[in-house]
Length: 254
Image (cartoon, rainbow, N blue to C red; front, top):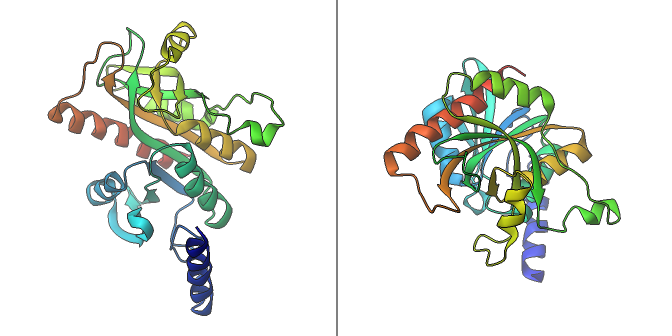
C-alpha cells in the first residue's frame, strides 16, 4: 500500500514537471475530456463505443487499462470512460472527472439483472432512483438515508430518445455490494418495486448531487435474477446498441 502511494505521488510530480495536469487515475491533459461523458464499467466497452460511435476518437487514458476516449458524435464533443465494477471503483473515476476534469453531465451505460416479472431480458431501464445495500453514503450524511436520484432533465431527454424502442422502463434500481448475494434482499427489493440490480448507479447519483452535476444511468437487462434467463450474443449486441444510442442522444440534447 505504501509503495502504491509513493508511486502515485511520483507520477503526479513527473506530470506537473511536463505541465500536464492530471488526476491520480486519469491521465488526461486539461481539456482532453468533454463536459459530457458516458461511463461504462467495462473499459473494453468504452473502447467499443469510441470505435463504433465517435468520430476522430482519441484515447486520453490507459492507466490501469481503464480506457478513456474523446471524439465527436453528430458534431458534439463526447467522452467515454471506463469506471470498473462496484461503487468504490466508480467513485474514484467519477470524483476525479467532476473535480479535476470539468465534467458536468455523466451517463452510466451498462447491464443489470431484472427482478420484476414485467422486466424482461433485453429491456432498457432508465434508472430514476438508485438504492443500495452499502453504507457508503452514510459517511457523508451522519447516518441519514439519502435518496439518490437521476437528473430530471437527463431522465426526460432519455425517455424521449427511447420512445422508438418497444420495451423501456423508468423506475428504481438497486446498486448492490455483492454480486453473488445469498441473502433474501431480493425479495424485499421486489416488494418495494425495484426493477433491477446493478452495482454502480447509486454512487454516480450521490457524487453528482454533492458536486452539483447531472447524472443518469441507462441500463440493458442482460439477465433475470429470478427466472435465470440470460441474453444470447446476438441480443446482447443489438440491445447494447440501443442503450448507447439513447445515452448519446441524451447527452447531445443537454
